[in-house]
Image (cartoon, rainbow, N blue to C red; front, side):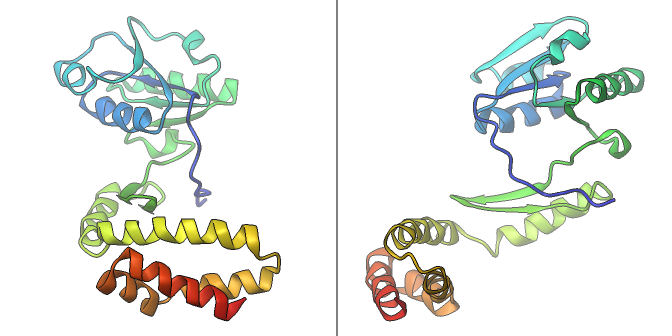
Length: 211
């Protein structure tokens, strides 16, 4: 069954990661970037993890896994190489109604982490429902050359205009018409060729014409 794709707000929320190897270090870095309160539980902290995560704001418990560490978590990631432990973690999460991802074990995942491209506020997530993460990564590499920092800057400018339009124009139909005009290829080309300041003038004209 296909998973339901969402972007989840993790700021200030507790996320537990079991394991402290190279894979866990990548997961933890992204979680901390998203503002999560990360707890790492592992019998051994590997050197790569310690180096990569040394400056991150997280809590580390060096010892045996225990179900009690899951209390209050909104999400759990298991990144151990012990299948019995991974199964136990997944079972514990189900009992506590906490969503869980066991790395590289799709049948023990309530969610998958997509390959992702970030260009400022623009994020493009690519997933294969857990069937081929390698292909997701391949597509990400291809799309990285197509979507540049300029796309992210354009989206940021769009956000400013969108906020103003929502505040000033009550008619939903007119707002929709304005937003559609602002995201055309012509609009983007204006931004690319003439810069943000000129695009703001262009956008203002579109707002007036479609109000």
